[in-house]
Structures are given as structure tokens and as C-alpha cells.
Amino acid sequence: MKTTEVVEKLEQLRAELFEASTPFIHVGSRDPKPIIEKTRSLWNKAAGRVPDTEKITHYRHERPKKYQEIKTSSKVDTNVIVPIAGVQSGYFRLQVDCPVHHEHPDYFALEVLCEMWSRTEGPLYNGIRGEGLAYGASLWLSPIHEQLVVSISESSSPNEAWDVFVTLLTESLEGEMAETTSLEMDAAKAAVLYQMHGDRMTPSMASDLAFAGAARGVIAGNEEFARREKLLHDVTIEDLKRVQRAHLDRLLRPENGISVVTCGLGSSESIRSGFKRSKCPILLHEQALDVLMSD
Picture 1 (cartoon, one colour):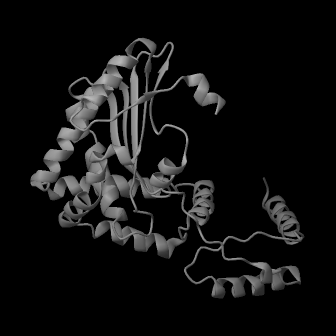
Picture 2: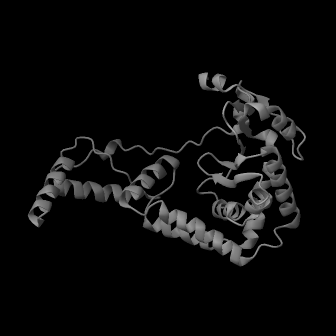
Picture 3: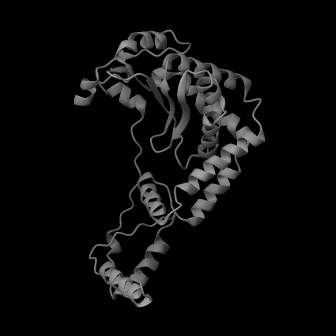
């Protein structure tokens, strides 16, 4: 395309943009007022009129209801096992309340800790996949929902994999992560940093991240990104020990969370009995798939 054609297309785009009667402008800043005023000035200069920014509303992000509230108010079982015809492997997920969101001071330390637990050759990889109990095992934080999540996938025995996780976590809590090294922590930090950059590696991804961040109450922008990079860089082994004591032990109280197991039709009873006899028991109620789908 010739330069003149590019300029012509850009002029058409500019004209269509400023013809919008109710433009939507996303502002990522702790103090949006200066940016709003600058936007009004530039818009007036380019379009010959001022956008209606008087109607701008500050939307506060409302976080989802805590699981404990759901458990006390919902009529649906929150610890279920769902047998499915044709399924050969078992899948298990436990989600528990964890009050760590994107702006929480423990956020980056907990992200690094979860990465250390879930990485290749990490505790879950060696203890569960390495023993042939499951193909996948991971621990992660969902900050928008304020949850900690344990997931075991493609498992020959999800209840045995859960027992291994309980043993590993108990030993880690009692041992205060004594064997953790700076090299392991730095590798986990690098993985978290890579994910942060990976989420905005293209213009469209950066735009999507900004809009998603607005819904989550997370500020966008290069200055904010640099601030969060520094928070990640400043995480220490002592921080990891502190957040493990403060947050991970809640996974040993699964009765306060939501547990879901899916498995084949012929294995549900043995798996349910296994979870009941576990070191950290989970009482599962069998639920038919068609009932869940109808709900």
C-alpha cells in the first residue's frame, strides 16, 4: 500500500472516530482527573467539540461472593463427584477462599510460591506425576475470585494424588520451606514475569488486558507495570515462608471450600471412599451429570 493510501485510510479512521456521539475512553490511572482533562483538550482540538465526560462514572470493582457465603446459602452440594460414561481418567479440583487479590501485599509472593509448587520438577510434579498418579497437578491463585485452587488432571487415582498433596503441604508447613533456595525462587519469579509480559506481547493482547483489568479493578499503563515488576523482584524467601503460613494451610480444611471430582462410571464409589478415608477427608456426594447440566 502506498504512503498516500495509508494516510487516506488514517484520515477516514480519524473522521469516523470523532463522529462518535458517545465515545468510550478507558483510563488506567490511580488519579484519572488529569488524563480526563487532557483527553477533553485533545478531543476538542481534533474534533472541534468536547466529549461528554461529565457523565463519567467511577465504577468500583465488586468481588464475587466468598465461597463460605455460597456454601451457607446455596441448596446445591458443594463437594460432588460426577461419574461420566466413557471417561477413563479422574479429575479433581478444590477451590478455597483466599483473600489475596491483585492489590493485596501478599499477591506476588503467593504467585511465586504457587509457581514453585507447580513447576516441572517441583513438589507436585515429582510427588504426583513422578509416581504415576496423575498427568497434571498444579496449584494456583485466582486473584479476581480470591481463591486458591488445587487441580489434579488425568489421574488414575485422584484420591491418592490428593493424599500425596496433603502430605507434601503438611511437611512443607512443618519444615518452614527449609530446603528452598534463591535459585528456585528466582526461576519461579522469571516464570511469573514471563507470564506478565506474555499477556501483553501484542497490541490486541495489551488492549484486552487493559479492558479486563478495568473490570477487575487493576490499573493499566507502563508506570503501573513497572511498579508491579518491582514488587515481584522484591519478593524474598522470608516472604514465601510468611505467605505459605498465612494462606496455604487453608487447603488442609477442604470442608470450607468447593470440591469437584469427575471420573468414569465404574470407579466413582472407590474414589469417593478413598477421599472419605483420606488424611484430610473430603465427603463427596454423587451427582448425575444430567442433573448438573439441567441446573
